[in-house]
Image (cartoon, rainbow, N blue to C red; front, side, top):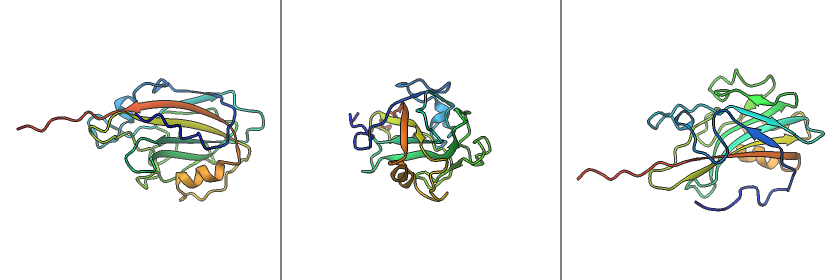
Length: 182
């Protein structure tokens, strides 16, 4: 596992708390949070709750990012923008195709599969463990102003000067290589 921190070159901001009934910080994703292309995978977004955001927070964004994907640029699994400051939780499954369980005004951006939803973990077999940074970003604007078809990288770039705080939970996943039958 690579020890790099995807936030190392971003502005330092205070942290606050994010928890989940779906996964514990540092633990492996349950099967439901894996890609539907894998046995038991269902592409179900995790339940998230957060507290302690900095004073002046006017909205949130949520991202799920795998820096260990063998792409040279990582892999964005989910991005949600314009979550109202009055919201402090997303239910499990809110990142489905409909987005109907997202709070009013919030919207999902296309992930690296170009799907406007949460896509689960699917590290290549034998590639080793991957980290999934589940992040709630506290922002100083009510709307971050990115178009709905923007990439999560554009969201991150646009947010960089508006982040008041960051709550991080890290999940893991690994697909073990199986030996081919002789």
